[in-house]
Length: 472
Image (cartoon, rainbow, N blue to C red; front, side, top):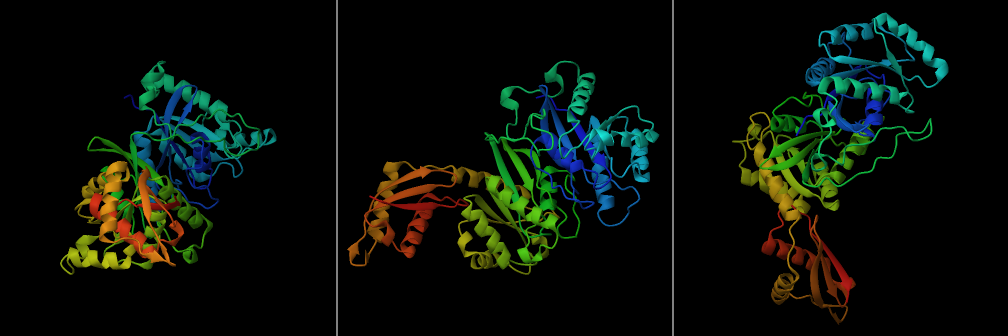
């Protein structure tokens, strides 16, 4: 499979890089907020134009003079992105004009020898295009005045990107990015030709099923080590890792091959209680994490071994289960606890604190030492198989008759309750329809008995089970 050209978007903080990224990719994947430094990690997406396919990388704001906080880490992320890129989109702010930081970035870009497209963003009308004159001090022949928010001027930029791509990889589309149909990633490729009226937001993005791909999410409270686990699994420093809670704000997708399966790893923003969400951007982070749970197949709930299992961890587990996603509990930083408590003791504690997740496997791991990290992926694959498991109707009804013989539904309100027939309606999650004469009278304790009996018989480890009772 031919590699698609990689294009990095760079620039000062708050010039509209993430807005342009969202515009090109075709949906609101990156967080966009009028606060400098919102995008910290490299955020990857794909887009297609005129039959050619490209990988787009949104980077953190580049401020060369900042040497504290996140900025040194962000700078390293940008350097890594530039090294792997074929082309660069350098975004400038048409409202603020040319600033000294822009000059520094421009000078730094020259040493990479990459094709650079100088984009002047926030040019919302033709009357404002004269503002690009200031930027000619950079010694550049061509600028692209655009409005990433409203989609103005994007066509000229894309046409020149395709022309440059042809020069890099030849005129054959397959040589620099077009793939055969079976290799395409339908859920992330979006057409970017502007077909909507000026002033409207992003074009509609139609999601397609990601057949053959298993989406694995890592969620949990801030600073539990989600990014560190992802970095270890990927074998790179794709994510920024620091001791400051809440470093990751966007959901970052990464592709990995594991035991002949294509996995999409998603690292998410740390989930906080609503009372702790002080900035609007943090609301985006929580929303992004919840959306990640929605679109994942398997969710790994990462717990800090030293901090222990909290009420909030139980709440996150509840969200995962109610969404019908596979669940694996990952106790990270186990190297800091090992020797003080046995695994059996800690696992018992986990089950006590999160009783509704008793069906989920518990993995004791350490992102720092690398211990048991790939056991997480092995477990995720097993959970995925359990999510997709289907029991034949004949076998299911025979098994349920055995359940009834051990413990039958008792009389309720003077009526004999009977379950007459059972079938599995769907998978992901496994859902069973139970037809009864008085479904509304079946008590909760008996429903729990049936679910536990199903698990004892068939497993379904890590997979939520749905029991639906209908009138027969």
